[in-house]
Length: 290
Length: 313
Image (cartoon, rainbow over all chains, first blue to last red; front, side):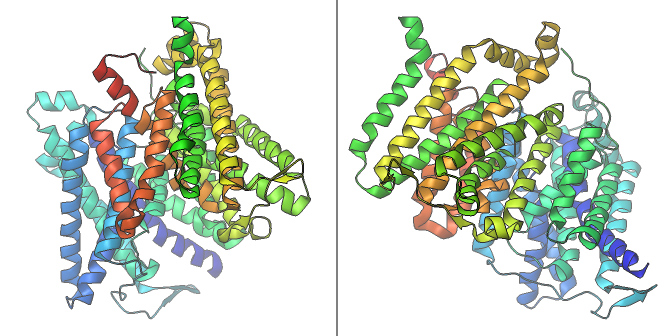
């Protein structure tokens, strides 16, 4: 029982990070139909920038805020310099552009930072808490709480503000949104900024537990993409559910089946789900127009 | 005659290039690089049949490449299979696997197809990485040199001719496939799958054929590279290699066989040129991928052809 609880907790912790990455994918995808494979690099930038600012002597909160702002700047530049000029290009072309961007950012991080593994100190110490026989690191609560807070904030922003309504309108129908006076280009830019911020926060929250280095982005992007797919591409609720589910399955798979194939669990599940439900768990069926 | 030339012109061009290039290659190092270009070009050409003609993306083709490569390493070392037979078995295994997973995977569309193929490729890479006893794990394993009729094939020039010849053969088969009823069916599916089905085309069957054929091309390339390098590593089947292959196909131009060769050449040569600036290798590679896709959206060969008013080859 305590063993199961242990797996569930570590699964939820990792799953929360996947959920945030998946949410970033979903935001950009809804606004622009672009799958941004550089999403994992936002997570890396958040963690690495914080680590280096802390090494320069800044307190963690200040370093974290600056890191989020820096990542937002990168997200906006990515949109302006790489996505905007390629407007109207096909899906595969856009995928290659964002993968190019992810390789570029990884290369840049390798030059600006270094190739070492880094860890942030845990926000509230390393003394584990025992719940029903399962030991939980305090940082897990930070990750789960931070994820919940971000999801609520994002929900409130999108459903309770005028700009948020414009985001919904743009996601629904870009042409109609333009016709009622929404600057859809700026909304897409905003989506990139938001998903960069979410990614950076995920990177900072996870850095004390999972370590961070210049090349963590690829696997995170793949898992996040998989989680977003699992939930049905373009559904924010699905993205969070998909992320948590993926984390849980991974933890249970690693605990009960095989820890060497921990990363494989995610992809086996995705293949199985896609074979059974070609549009994901929460996705709508797409009809092709001839 | 003009019809024949239009059909085989590209092949002729490549034949002349493969035959004359050694005259311009000053050292064994350059011969080796040219060999790598031919091998990649072969794999990309197969992928192009799937992506450029059938319109189905695959982000997992390195998986098939890895199967072809590890077959010539594992089978002779662990089971004593003769190398040439091992090569054929590897290619057959990749084709068979593509046949089995192809049907459910190809039912998916767009990004779902992308993530499914991606997942498939990663699973293959993980097996290669984790089955230490068989595959040597993350370090990979050495490949015994190929011996044909008592002669060990080891000179770089020999492998240049073998890979160049295989590439030419691959292109000949690809040209025939494109002009065949299956090829026409694939192009119809690319334009609109529903319309193609209404016209009586068995779309799942045609897509599956393209998938299996492209997997076979990838496995042949993998086997050749394993022999040329004398070493196999899990990266060969990895996600980044899959991406590299897709990037080569798109960069050269989807639907253009010549483009596949050119795309492969650019992305094989680029890292070689960048080894001087080792620190900046990834940075520049990413930059080139982005710039190429922004400014040459249709790929190099079709973009240039369009500018010159030619029909894309």
